[in-house]
Image (cartoon, rainbow over all chains, first blue to last red; front, side, top):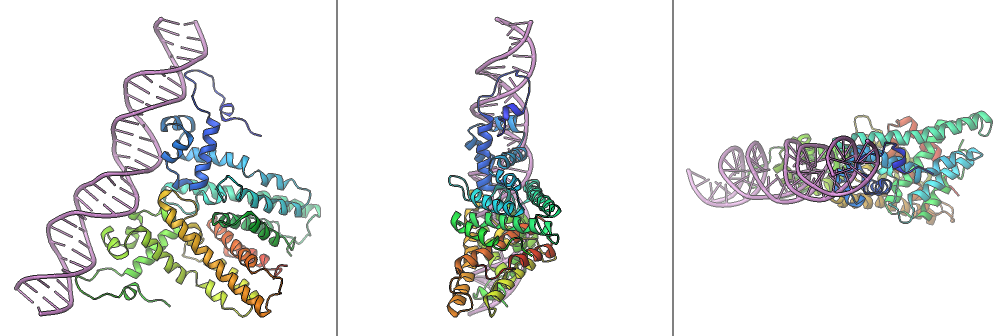
Length: 207
Length: 207
DNA sequence: CGCCTTGTGCACCGATCGGTGCACAAGTGC
DNA sequence: GCACTTGTGCACCGATCGGTGCACAAGGCG
């Protein structure tokens, strides 16, 4: 699915090789950011869970913001793949269904923190977190654009009625997905959220 | 609508009277928490905006957690009154409409921070923010209970069909409200979110 | 082997965190 | 006036924040 971090950063192998698995460490960091948010995850929290020293973290990932960015990238590839999978569905209705169903499952995955890193990672933050916050705002907007473009295509192809508003449909689904994330953080179960998702799509396309 | 803070804390007037307006200071603190979240709002941020010294803040409000609790209380009374107003509507359909319309307006109020303090105030936090996070989880759950009880009453009264699920309806509306908050933080406008709210209620009651 | 480059562990940086001790100011009640 | 109670401003607390300097370890390459 994705290459290991060491392979992505292709550099000549000179000097002492690192003693830890950068990919595993990045996955650990992703979890910490997912659970505690950008501001709530201290370097001590992160490096302890990653099993490496501060110095090794900085050498391998740059700084805290870059680590967050790379963790979000992994999150996108691993936890948010359902978005791309949904977009590939045959019809707009299947796209919507798969998108919300995927959101329900991704936000209530056993063994994973509840909710979505892209939502709760940095919603309201202090001065030190504005970069992370803006990164996530752009991340969520990107997903919404993907949906909008897909629905625009559906309109063009006649899959959706000509009067359908792709922008509205995308925002509608993303709003529900965002709400599902908040609900999951509050302890809502997969079954409860699945019923919500089903209700949200009872009338599709809404018009 | 609500008494001034000084009046609530009824105590004999002995000793030097405080030089600042505790109610105004609390409203300022509410704004800071609203904008930056519990963890993101430092005591320096808070006291500077409140216009008082750290010592005065501690004397008047206890500590940061209590200040947050009291700020949330004010927020509930001032910004989230639309919930109680919606609950008082005649029919379940009007309750739902007023609830979502109120959420849209409260989350995009000009001159106020976008989004909802109860959502973005403390979603994913570090060790220092767990109390605030759990407070907000309970706060959101309480609003959802109000909706559920109101819809249960509607079922009992025949306003909603006997097969309607009050718990599901309440969670559905709260999920959309939560999503609206996230969307507002991302820059969505009142008009855009109002269309989302309208779409969410096109088919009411969903069944 | 020695040279060079890079990773690692530890101590440490200045800044900021939430919270407080203390001296003094400003009121009320006598 | 006095005693008493409480608010205020400032300096300061230990802890923690993100980030680094430095000595040394561990590999490739000649």
